[in-house]
Length: 193
Image 1: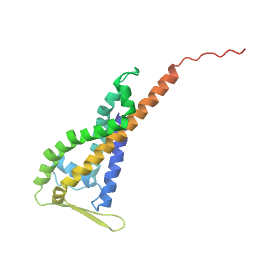
Image 2 (image 1 turned 90 degrees about the vertical axis):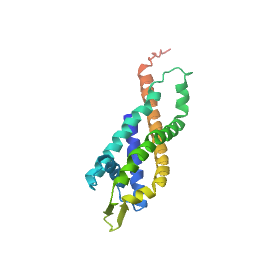
Image 3 (image 1 turned 180 degrees about the vertical axis):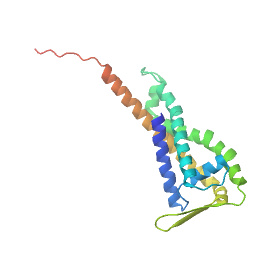
Image 4 (image 1 turned 120 degrees about the horizontal axis):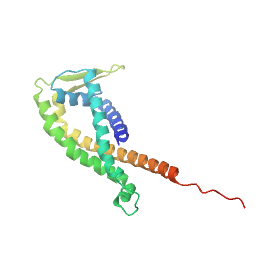
């Protein structure tokens, strides 16, 4: 679960940075806003972005453990509901991602991030220049004006996280079972006639 959650978090982080670059938002702005919310200190540094990224990876890894629990608690009885979960791992992942968005992302957004951004008085700007000379900027106050777009986009990201994690967890589980079955199958000697 930890590995699947971490891999999925890395995938989501790559997508976030790609969206930031495609929309002329400074790379790492998501993690910077996350850390501004937690620290309530208007410090704009690469260290804040790296810390936010590390926190995102840690949270994704931890969530991967919770996601793996139903898959880990199954047994080999073919009539158990857990066998149905094998068949529907992608659906389980998408559902888990939706629940994650609903239960974790929305409350954090509305009860922590939005109030923290409202408390930043002077609408500071995050500015970044890439090696090609293109300048990207984001006014923190503008984040609030696009919060609905961010929330809808986050639904897709959370569902992608759930889908990817479920597929990886299910794959690891089947690989483990295959090795377990391969190692526990007794070999029958073949007699020559």
